[in-house]
Length: 365
Ligand code: CA
Image (cartoon, rainbow, N blue to C red; front, side):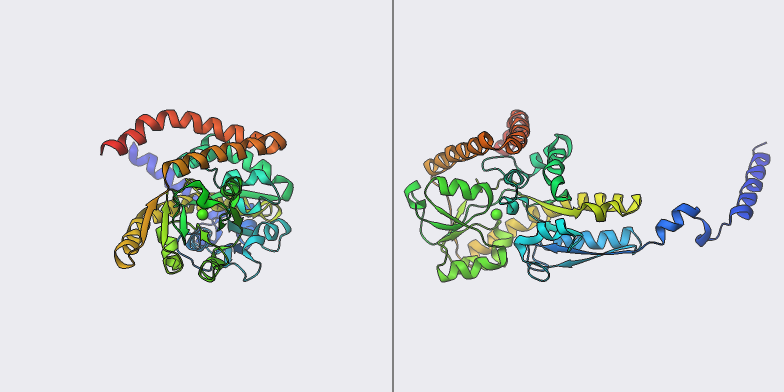
């Protein structure tokens, strides 16, 4: 009986093959074959030096994933900061279609739309795990899409550095007064908080940091953490390396896609972009988790870097200033207020659980 059924099945299969053709090139249906014959060549501009560890490697990995998964139907060429557009013009380039994609950090666009900053980091806000939870299961991504919609840009989470460090300082910071008049490269809301306590925030892309710090154009800079700060040689330009990263507790990066270009893709290529961004979003955090500690050991043992925590009263004052900055924005900007409400509610709720899970575990292991 079974044999008879198999025989029947093979007859049906054979008949299907004769009618439709079973050769590899003929398997596709006519509508699918029109899509799969379409090839796309895209540009992806970034705010990073080409192939920079972590940040710059992520878009390269993304482009490789997309090319392999699409069998070469979507080829994406990655450009470092300044190759096509300067690092701070990535968003405009994607919005205008100069490049189909970008990889950068949302807080660089604060001049365009202040609410964007919260998709990178809020001082004393959420860490990497919590940010990803908010983006993908807490309504954060829907808000991010809403904020970028008027610019014809679609955002995707594009990696996370984990908790950053407070940065490199030429002089020790013993009290909040030591931050007064201090010229420091610190972007986004962290920069606004520094200003609130009397400092002078300066906006510079990564590639400009070392020279600015070494020549004394700035007194201090934050960048990312040991892995990236070692790569730029910042230890050669300042003596004191402070922690913790109060200003960027889980800085998220972003992939941006020009909306028209995205909509021109067939569904499978759209899905490939979505999945590849998710893979890279996690991969970057893994890379920082593995490399930051190694780099810190190098900074401590090979270069004798003086690493210190900020004094507790400095942290308390920065925290109070952070809250004031957030409330001021929310009071005057309805879009900012909407995103901040979603963010702060998620943070409040996730903290309740993380206090008895993550925090308790760190204390005890
Ligand atoms: Ca940073």
